[in-house]
Image (tube, rainbow, N blue to C red; front, side):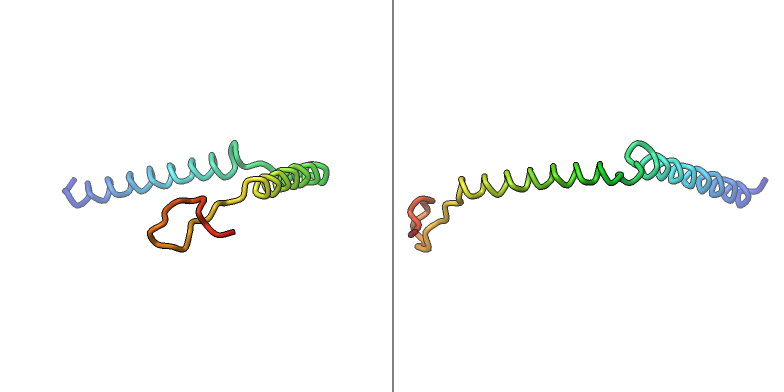
Length: 84
């Protein structure tokens, strides 16, 4: 075979290999372990309750641990020196 024919064969082999790899990745990651059917009504309700609990905890923590802002004075770098 001529070198041109070998180039075409190599390109076709690499194309088939690339297509196969993309297909396997798609099947594994989109329809594999992570790909699960949608939650049922009860599971959705439980998940939403859990998210609301976590959000309430975040809000409570942010209220208890307020940010200390810096002073507007350029030369004062201490955190606790801001006017309240």
